[in-house]
Image 1 (tube, rainbow, N blue to C red):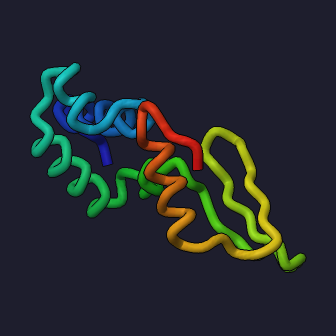
Image 2: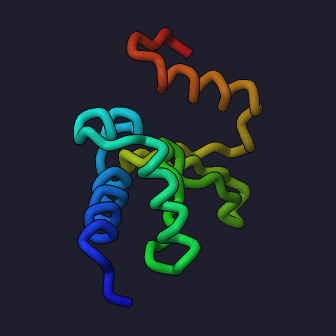
Length: 107
């Protein structure tokens, strides 16, 4: 399917927004784009199979049991945390909260 200039414009900004470190709102504001329009265009591209579905941005990549009775949390910055047993959910929640806090306290 050949894309129109308008479709090329939106596809470009959808891909740039997803690959940037900015939130969708920040990206749209910086580029003078309506956030709702970007979301609607993204949905249209996905429905027509013209855009790869990517996982949402996250600091956490996965949590796995690697068959050695050790559990791992892989962070998007390449750090790998390994545990002999699955950490408590409350501890993981506290870790996530601390990672999102610009001035974290000791855990």
